[in-house]
Image (cartoon, rainbow over all chains, first blue to last red; front, side, top):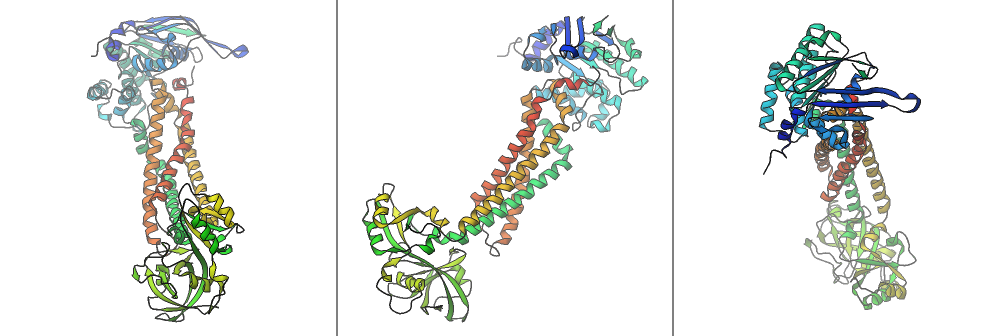
Length: 238
Length: 375
């Protein structure tokens, strides 16, 4: 007797309309004299299928924005909604579960697990979620094809080039059909041509799979593919 | 074990090294267990084989009672009249040297652990070959260790000093020894000749003595009253093992070595998994960022620990059993299944405990670090 409302997958699908909403979010790191304002009253709404780029120098608070939007860190004040769920109202445990269900991360230099093949990297999130079934395997194959890594399905990270690793990381982030896709410096390890390719692929997948995508980067050359571009300076978004 | 298994395969060199250490410790564990059981058998298998629950020694003898204690006829008579005492009978114990004077191995010198008892007592042996003890005859029943020296039924041994003639009448074909010396069974008078080194007729006083009172007690036996009346102290069968020469020192030495082995093993496993977990920190942070609950990662890591420990211990135990089987007969060595199971089980349990301390670090890893340094 599984009703659509209690099936997590169905819930994730229906709540996709929520996208990502940050409202008046501030984050202060440290305390006393060493306190640093990483985010200063930031508000940002990203609709499903929308690709937003945030550029800024290092130390401007870009990564803090991702940490708060992705539920890795609780903001000092303000609210974060992901796919209709208020992340800021959840316990640490519930936030971990929400990350698994609603959020896809693409990390700097892709951050793959050394012992897993490309396909296994993709299956891992679903194993964590306890939903590693035939449908998951089919979806992994489909995503590997979508990012153009079919010939690398059985390769481990040390056998892949930087660009291939980045694409594997993107495919992994998409495995759980996340409502929100957060991309951290995707091009830091790539040359100019591969950077453009990687970002074009992110934009393509964002539109095709209706994720609310936020990419932070200090590389101003790759912003063309984004629907909107913000600049971040000293924790403020403009 | 999604990740754990793949990590095992991927980093097999490192795990194999650590597994080899655990396996070698398991080999050593089996050999030590075998040696401990072998030494125990050599030390007290004669006592273990006796059908009794307690032994009462002269209360003035507080250590090495088997060589120090003497009890009198009235003592075992008092004990047998005590309520709750099923059986009480004299038991004699002494070490003697003798020489084969008739038989194939003539002039061979043998050491004997002589157990003296009434021939009609349940303590008396049931020989596998030949006859049992008989009242008033100097016949003895030998055990396998003596037979292995070439002594056969029908041979005559002559005891040193007392010159008592001992005719071998029966054989218990089993390794039964006491204080690392093969046991021979004799009737009480023969035992007294050997114990006191007296040939000919025994003095009146001596002919009513024994080393201890062998007791079979019911749980409700009035031990305190009998002890008081006789000036003896009753020890359980297991406690009498410590009264045999060297047994306590041997078993505690073995226990100490084994204890150290387990501690070393737990530390090796703990150290390995500490380094392994620290090395894995970025991957753990990544898994947490992806949404893996800490419990999932901990279960994965512990499954890996147990898999490695069980595989390494099983391998080491198998090798140890093979080596041990080759040792049987050449050294005081015997393989006892419970002792080996305990040794291997402890290795796994203590290794897991060492590793638990190490993988607990997983809980402290911050998923935020997966985002990289540029913040």
